[in-house]
Image (cartoon, chains in turn brown, yellow, red, purple):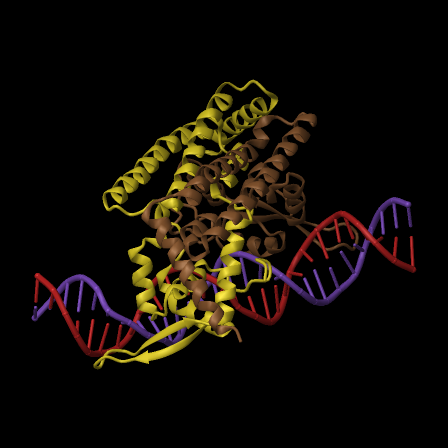
Length: 209
Length: 209
DNA sequence: GGGGTCATGTAATAGGTTACATGATTCT
DNA sequence: AGAATCATGTAACCTATTACATGACCCC
């Protein structure tokens, strides 16, 4: 099954499959484990939809109930486990994620591609602001590393943060390299951009009053 | 309105607002223009949902019908234009996109964070495969630049591709730096990873037959 | 007694995708 | 004649999000 034909696209579903590959668990335990491992930092998941996702995984035959526990008068805990199909799907999905680059659509890329709709001076100011904020993000990630190193957690469990850092770092460097062009660029694009927004500014005030 | 309270999150809606900021258009013309400018390369959009999105923009009061044209017996063309609210929303949204970094959730980052669920040798092979594919992606983007340069299009209209290239390049570099660690890493994480999958492999064959 | 955690779920909503349907016009 | 383009829309589906609801148990 390729990504095109995959029904479940919610990353929470993959996270659940991986957890159950480790060992059978009941839903609350899954959420607790993921929270403990801070999976929400690297995987887009909403714990609120856990029970929905489990329904879907059941429907697809990827997991099945193993046993139902009851302690005292508390609600029943249903422990789920992977089916062979689930194990296969987990493997296929994860291997695809790791081995095959897919085009992602970061919002910033969309923003850049629509940048000419902002006045040039404003665009410049916003990008400078972004650079500052990115520096804070970078500090935050590095602080996270420092913390993890103190806890003596092996590097293997933080490679996703290393990746995140590399991406953010690259973005920062990219913007800083881009700024001079937007600022002093003498090509036709920049000229037309400036002209367009000068026109607009001349038009608008008429409407007021 | 911040991203938290925004109702329309479909980037196609933003693209439409920006187009109408340029000039009033009818839907088909919007799609044609976006296609011509290859917006689908940098913005996640499905032209099929254009008419749905336009309904939503109308409902929100961001656009309104300007005039309805009919040529011969063809279907009516409704030309839409921005309302003041639409212009404001466009500006707010775009400025936010450009000026404020938000956490994105690339699938590869999720994959890395779940990597221990794959056998180490396989993970390694997949990452090596990914590097090769990334090199192709990079070549593709660079070929795009060459083409654009021949067309004498100003750089301003390709900065989103430059950004994309920077990100992909950073990812390639990151993986190549990571590989030696996964391969020869002598820390506890790698050791436990190898041990876990050795165990699994020893278990599984029993099930067959 | 109250707050926090354990633990499960339901229901409403809707934004978005996909596929389908229609028909005129223009080009080859 | 037939294919491609112009041009608009509908309708089903449905994943996923959000909010709400429930109640036991435990510790201070």
